[in-house]
Every structure is written in C-alpha cells, then in structure tokens.
Image 1 (spheres, rainbow, N blue to C red):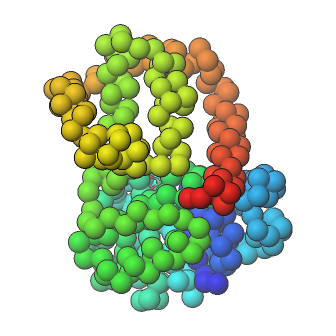
Image 2: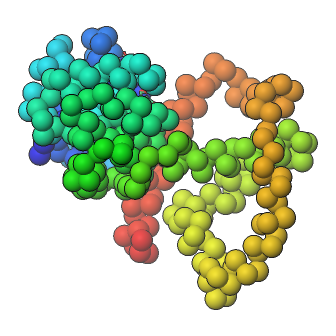
Length: 314
Ligand SMILES: NC(=O)c1ccc[n+]([C@@H]2O[C@H](COP(=O)([O-])OP(=O)(O)OC[C@H]3O[C@@H](n4cnc5c(N)ncnc54)[C@H](O)[C@@H]3O)[C@@H](O)[C@H]2O)c1
C-alpha cells in the first residue's frame, strides 16, 4: 500500500481517488477550493455502493472510503506520497504553476503525474529541476470503470519512472498504454478524433443522420470493439488473417483517403443540425441524469467483461 496525493478534486480527481483507494492505497485529497474535496467525498459516498452492487469493489464501501482524507495544505497532502495525480484545470499556465509547486514540495522520489487530456508533458515540465520524475497519466472518464490509461513521457522523463508508473497502474487494475514519446492527442484522442471527423462529415454532407451514426457504433462496430481492437478485428475477418484482409480491402480503403483529407466544418448549419437532433432526444436539463445512466451502463458492462473474460477467456 502506498500513499497517493490527489491534487485537484473535480470530476477526474474524485474518480482517481476511487480507483486508487480500491487498489488499497491511502489517498490524500487537496484542491485550491476546500469545498471541492468535501464535494468529491460526498460524490464518492454516493457512488461506492453502486460499484459494490456491480461487483466492482472487492471490499465493503466503508473500507475503501476510510482510506480517503481531505487536506487543507498542499505540503501536508504530499508528505510521504509515492505518486501524485494532478487533475487541475486544463490550462498550460495552471499546469506550469502547479507542477512548479509540486516539484518544490514533494520528496525527490515522488512521481508527479498529470491527468491532462491534451497538453504535452514537455509544455509544463521543462522548467523543473525534477522534470525527470514528471509524466502524463491520462485516463478515460471514469477511470474506476474504464481500465485504459495513457502513460506519456516528456523527452526528459526517466524511463524507470515510466516503467514504475505503468506497473503501479497495472497493479491498480488499469491497462496502461505506454507511449514511447509524446504526441499531440496521445493515442486514444487521435483515434477518437479520426472517428468523430468522419461522423461529422457524413452528417454535414447529408449522407446519414446522427441516429444512423450512433446505430453504426452502438449496434455495430463497438460490439466487437468492446472486447477486441481493430487489429484483432481485421485479423479474424479474412480467412488467412491480417495480410489477407489488407490484400482484399486496402484498395477500397485507398479510394476513401481523399475524402478523409477534407476537414469537417465543425460549425455552422451542420453543427446546428447535430445539436438540434441531440437536444430533441435529450433536453439540456437531462444531461446530468443521462451521465449517471451512462456510468451505470458502464459499470454493468465492466462487470460483464470481467465475468466473460473469466468464463470464456480474455
Ligand atoms: N473530465 C474528463 O472527462 C477528463 C478526462 C480525462 C482527463 N481530464 C483532465 O483532468 C483534469 C481535470 O479535469 P476535470 O474534468 O476534473 O475538471 P474539473 O473542473 O471538474 O476539476 C478541476 C479541479 O481542479 C481544481 N483546481 C484548479 N486549479 C487548481 C490548483 N492550482 N491546485 C489545486 N486544485 C486546482 C478546481 O478547484 C477543480 O475542483 C484536466 O486536465 C482534464 O483535461 C478530464
């Protein structure tokens, strides 16, 4: 069991608190707004029973919850921490300042990890004496249900810190993607961006509705993708495997490349129509309720995946 400092206790900080406490670690929560840490604990209190009901906690909720404590001072929260998970605002100036504070206050062996979605680690750690112990650990929300997490080093991150962080995440039930070097969008957002761009083009150009696109994923491609990736998918979709698949379909994929080079508008009438269609099926005041529904569906899916991997094989 290690001590973990959660710095920034919003959406992602509170979610990390759950995933690390569930793994047996002691959690210290700190936020510039003291009420944020309290609010996070209130959210966690409400959520832990749902996780337990879905078989996603191996201990009673009270045992996991007892490992979490809010702190009023950053230095006290960092005392003795093996790992810091920074989840403050997504803004370069904020990240540069908080990482300067963390590097000044945390013991030299403490790993300093940022949850940033889209800021390269080199952009906020270059000025630090301890920059070799800094890296990105980017989750998909919520990390207590979604195992994939991106581990992204800056050019100066010590490879031993990367290896230690990946091992720490694996031991906490995560599936780390360990990037060899930093790249805008990391891995998952690059794939998501490619898919979203095509979805926007298809709707903006009038070929399909947003419901058609959603069916294509929800009732189609994503059923396989929820337990295998695109490479295994194509390996199993031609009699002789991946090379056979490429021989059959690459000429067709090449024909589409010119279309992919054209950017969607991401604005104007196309976006108005997409937003209008979404608000028809989900009024804005129902977004929060639907987020809770999504999280319950994700928990049920995670529980199913655990069972199926055990009964059928991973
Ligand atoms: N929301 C997501 O889906 C998601 C997913 C992956 C990664 N992230 C990343 O996680 C980070 C946090 O995002 P969020 O969605 O939790 O935002 P949020 O607004 O819910 O929470 C941010 C918290 O940080 C606190 N904060 C701001 N500056 C601070 C500072 N200097 N020191 C301490 N606390 C500070 C705020 O008071 C707030 O409670 C961002 O970098 C974001 O890109 C978000």
